[in-house]
Every structure is written in C-alpha cells, then in structure tokens.
Length: 278
Image 1 (cartoon, rainbow, N blue to C red):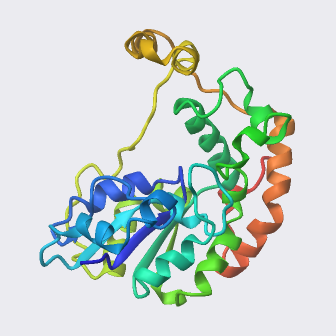
Image 2: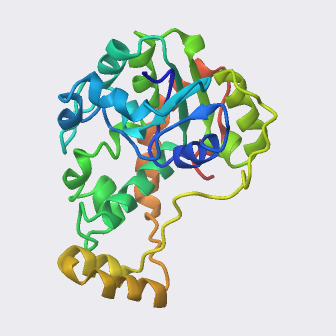
C-alpha cells in the first residue's frame, strides 16, 4: 500500500503538530517517523517496496499518509544526500496523492531552521545568528536550504507543474495553526475525506518545543561524548534563545518581499503577520 496524502512541508512551520493530531484520528494512518524517501538519495535508492513497508499496517483506513517537511524543497541542491527533483520523485510514485503544505513567515522560519541546525550539531554555536543568516558564515547553512526554502512560491510552482491545484491544501502557520487549530483540523479532515468532527485531544498545545542552554549546545558540539552532562546543564541553565539583529531582519524581509508578493497573489490574500515591523 502507498500513501494517498503527504504533509510535504514546510520545515519549522507546524508540521509536527499536524502529524501528531492526525495520528489520533481512527480513520488516518501515519508512520511515527519522517521517512525521507523522496528527498534522500540513500532512501530513494532502496525502491518503492522499502517505502511501502511503512504502510503495511494501515488496514482499511481512509487516509494513509506520511510527513516529511523536506519534501517541499523541490529543486534544492542540498547536503546530506538531498535529491534535487523531489517533486518529480514523489509524482512518479504517488501521482494521485493529496498534498498538505503549512507555511510560516519565511523570516521566522529561517531563524528557527538555523536554531535547529545548532541543536543538531550541524554548525558551531560560536557563530552568531546574523552571521549564519546573512553574514560571513552563511555558507555553512546554505546546503540546508535555510534561505532558499523560504521562497515558497518557487516550491509550490514546481509541484503545480505536476499536481492539480485541488490536490493541494495550503495552511498558514500564524493564521490557521496558531490562531484556529480546531477549525483547521476540521478543514484538514474534510480535505482528506475523514470525519471532521473527531474530538482531537490537546489541539492547542505545541509540539517539538526545544529547550537548550548555550553551554549545552557548545558542549554537545565540541564534546558530544559528554551528552548527559550537557543535558544536565540544559535543565539548570536558562534556555538559549538568540534573536537576529535589526539589520539582519531588514535584509531577510527585503529578500523575501518579492517572493511573498507572488505567493499572496496565488493565494488571493495577504498575510499580514509576515509583514516587516514598522
């Protein structure tokens, strides 16, 4: 059995929350983990049978799907085995699947993505957010699509070359997930053809909320063998929550201004939460 829907992205935009909610529904089957079949060379090379095995226990459920937010980066030239034509790989295997896209302010998404790279030891915490986003260290995160991923209109256009518009549901993190989670879940259920009145539990709670201290991040990066010690530091010290400077934020907002306008035109509405501060 192959999935009939996929949550394809975006990273750091509430896809883990949506995945956790949908797994509660009795008419929905989703594996617990992200499969990274269509976007990772080492998995895609294993073939469709490897992928199908993850859905063997779906039974007669109406909606069978998976969540891998890296799929949205359709033409990304990334590191760690990322394939450059994810949308074509996906269409070749599940051409009739429904696609769910959750989008977040691309500036905030980029900041969150860098923090994720810090937490997962991809880059050293000695670098500032400003340098990693727009400064001299930005080459260290380029292969992870930190900036490129946020050109949402480009990613969606790539998928619409292959999938009909009515097979794609686009949600906005700030307006749909954060502000109206219950009605958004009913909308998703309607899109998937399952009971929209199912009583989801704790729909308003966050998922994947990380709490790391700066000492813990530095220790994990340079002395990972002492992981238990750094987790103890995380429990005792205040969480490390850096924010970019005003100049970096202005540069990011300017970078995304034109792509955002194209997205707003396609959506037929503006997203005021994405506008730069006055």
